[in-house]
Length: 320
Length: 320
Image 1: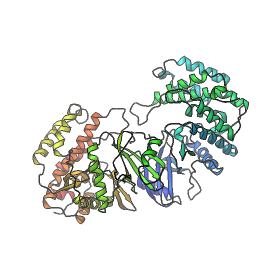
Image 2 (image 1 turned 90 degrees about the vertical axis):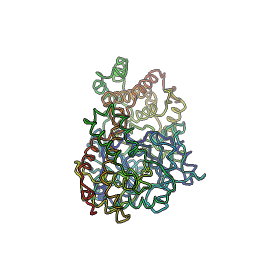
Image 3 (image 1 turned 180 degrees about the vertical axis):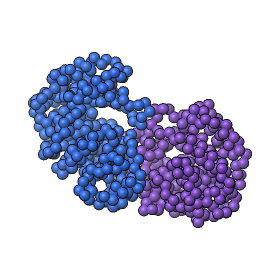
Image 4 (image 1 turned 45 degrees about the vertical axis):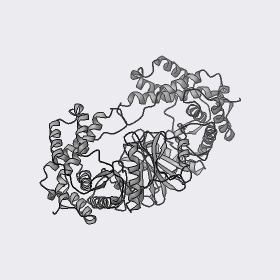
């Protein structure tokens, strides 16, 4: 649930005159996303999403994010496109914050994941990795293995009230730091392709949004994130059918090396630890009265334990 | 900030098939309104607002609210129209809640009130009262003078932490109960025409929304509510120019009786007490962690005191 910055009708009207899209006819704050303020804006020319970047997004990263969306869209990937103002720039300022107007994508994100969603997501992820291949900018993943210990230390003092056994996390962290792969194929990854960032229409994937965690990392790590985000049931059970469909959807578009499939269980553990740690950090740092619903870190502890018990990529339904 | 009920894509698709508007192409939760869950829905046929009525709205009142919107729109008043499903009904059920799909109104509500907004609002209020004249249903105003003592008693025990001097409220309540008018012209009133319920486009009022406090009461009381909602500056100062424009905007469309203008100061005190009491009630009954921003009751104590000092309708800029 979002909208942190209230944009006045006058500030909005002034902002929109920099673009060639006619005057605003309506503007509604959207109750989605937890990082930024989002408005759905209608003008005579069409529908747009106006995003004001709040403090969690580093302004210096915005040219990467906006440039990536533009690059991907130009290469046929269904994602929002930043609209350039008359001066050629898409990155602007509004109400003292960096802001951008991006195109509106039709479709809805699925509240209940069906197996066919996973086939579509796997294929889209592969297409995104292909389309991103020629993107010239680089952004290191500050939420990968090098960043986890810092995150853990930052919330360790208060974490005991949320997670009973911190030694378990310490042990996992040490193991991942020691064994994390060094030489897998890398490229632009989305890094946050959760169901609420993927839209569907008429039983097909219609688009992917929210590139504000995108970075340069192992492409197979993106797949591991999707395994965690799409293939567990609400009761915590791993759904092998969904995993098989996700992975085969990906492989139909883009082959996986033997080294990538072999690394999947470890990458999935790392991805589970990453979301466990960021949720833990948010949990202990979100004031009780905040207008944000906190997400339970324990969900990801359960996922981590599942991947610890995996014997090999075959447990994900992969025929190796 | 709202959206209390999460509607799944499947439930929404099933709901929309009852209407003749084509399939849903997008649906976004709106971060506005504090009473109900609202979604902005696009279909091939156009844009709609989907409202799920949460527990604060009595289901038995919904035929009045929806019937009123339909009646007003039919009589030329710019307000949303409930869309009837194929079976002829606009009041439906969705996710276990009463729900309705209403037409989308263009325009934006003003964050900073300019004098010309007040002229438009006054005229629109008068047009609404005219258009509502032939509406056959009646709904007593449970938030008028008969309801205030109950509200006050319900939060009296905890109110001391918010308002220092409860005796001041007790005295005002007794006086209003004794002197409240009995024979002013009455009809359908909006009863909540605050800036966030009034849309403007191209410097004209484009529509009025949120009829979920509408009821049958003195029409001049609606004007008193608007005096409080539109004519005070953010620093608490009363703006006589805005009041004069509001009242003259009204009178240009619909005359006011001498008895109505004479009663305005008392009606404005009553209106101030009404919002003071409902805000006080919400303040002491909203849990600290709730996803709702509480509104300060003291703003209305300040307004109440202003109206207590008014010598007559001339202080509102009215030439009597």
